[in-house]
Image (cartoon, rainbow, N blue to C red; front, side, top):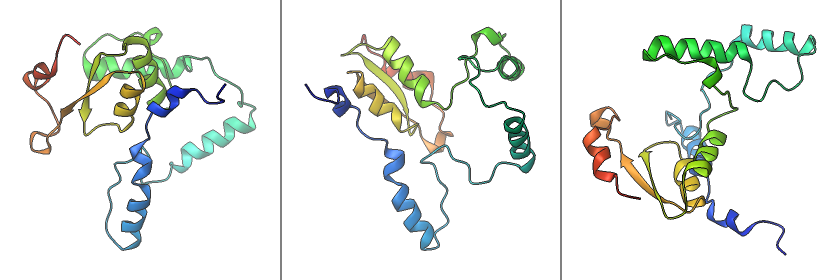
Amino acid sequence: MELIAGRIKTLGSENAFKVGDSIAECAKMGVKVIKFNLGEPDFDTAPHICQEAANNLMRGNTHYCPPQGLASLRKAVARQLSETRGVAVDADNIIITPGAKPPIAYSLLTYVNPGEEVIYPSPGFPIYESWITFVGATPVPLHLDEKQGFVFSPEALQKLVTPK
């Protein structure tokens, strides 16, 4: 019996990490680089946020939060989405995660069967294609063009939709 499940070989790699060395090399040569490989900002966290985090740690706020996220944060997210999107959103329908990769994985594992096709934005989050192939589906890139503001039309999407 193998220690690691065989399916892990189909996961592929995270291309966002692959280009990190090239980005560092370009930056070292003095090239101005705009990083699109990771969701890491190019600025430090604001001092007042760091202080509030430190205050919370010193008050003993070091334990797990509810699995769906803090109620106050979920309410704030629901309110912001409702106001900016014009759609009523209830905090009970909001889940806070530590990044996008877990919910992408959970969604594909939940809704996609082997042999099906998944349309994903390209360029987009690099893990999309890896997860799609990992679940046994076929990645179908929906190409986003800079000249069109990286926005796709309903017609471009419709052209990619198949029974799969």
